[in-house]
Image (cartoon, rainbow, N blue to C red; front, side, top):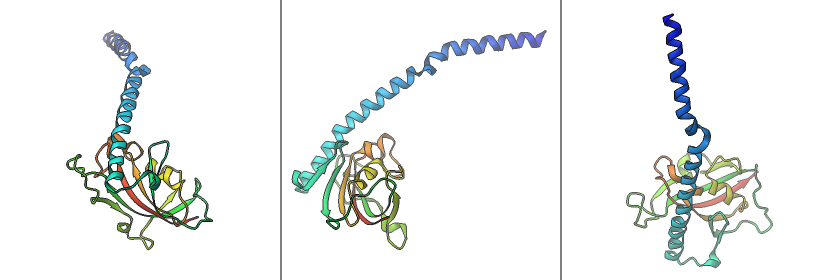
Length: 191
């Protein structure tokens, strides 16, 4: 009899907990969270674009010297590959030599210091001093995948990547949350 009573109490407690928790588990929380994420991303679209525009101004790069994609990625031409080459296609393997820098000093978030290198393909200690990437396979940040589809073998471009196309609100390793980044990127080979 005691076992039946214990089960009955446990069942009532479980039902009560479900009644209280069900609205939170039904998706209402996700909707609020999704709205907060969207609002945060929209805020940083404006902030990041301002930081990137300030970078372009400091370096005297005018509108004729860069391309801005619909997503907010900026590509500044440093040198072009062969005129007859085709843009990289999704699924192709690209060998990329790069240097990644901050647009601002992450320690202060306000001071501009694009000389701080956070990643460099030569540190990989491979013969090509590069990174091999399957383009469009989400092996790299979204800004890279998008940029590589706009490049061809031999191209060298400066990518100015807003945080939401980089590591977003969580950051990664030494890269703080909501940090726009700059990559000097050269496509060495495509296969």
